[in-house]
Image (tube, rainbow, N blue to C red; front, top):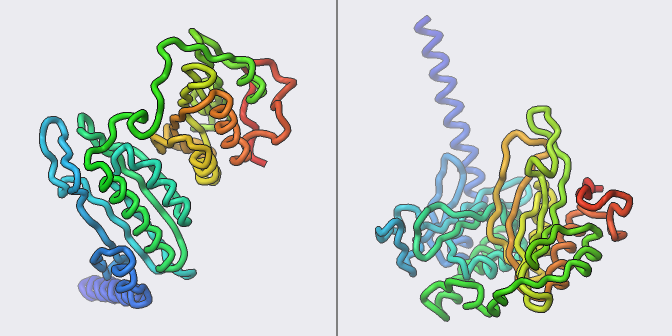
Length: 327
């Protein structure tokens, strides 16, 4: 028995040594000096995992959480981790952002070939409000490290212009909304090919899509829906809402809305064990009601969520329309 235990221990030790050797082999192929050069940071190698990680504290803005000035060590660190792959390299990371930095940083990520996989908060009662944007990408080290550097440079440029983060969309170029809402529903109904719900001068569209959870069919009323609500006036409107998309649909739909000047304000999940897996992202846009409606519809089309020939579901009674499954 003792010999058997000794043998198992030796095998485990040899396996561990082999894994470390493989990780070092991959690490040797990862041009860490180039990563340092392109990101402007000095990284650290985890030889066991074969991962090279650069990080820096977000200490250019004082953040107060629940009345306490928070040291960056307590969770205000931006990082990007690089790992060798069979086709080049992979990067994953988390970027600490303030509200007026989110849209520019996300646009920079997309413009440079990265995916944005989550956007959320980590704290309550933080001033100014802090958000965390997770990124992912695959390609050459030059491409990935260069893209990460551009995101970091984007935030530095914003804070260089104004050390204090903006506290409203109007502070970064938006106009104040009228006190009384007066959205005309007709043109929006035509754009979406559906009858919106009207209330006090506002209009809202909610469109469900089928899914399953624990073997039970779920749809619009159980929370698997995309919605858009419009307020303000026809010429000076706001839209806010939520998109329900699959993982494959997420990136193209995000890109479409950003292209049309719609701000993404959260990316996360609402459920567990659903089929297919659904991602949800929330958005906020300003402009004319028609332009905003067309921007939202553009996201639906790009994601393959609507038939290109609108109006959609013309034979379905208003209020029962639903997103068509991807083709």
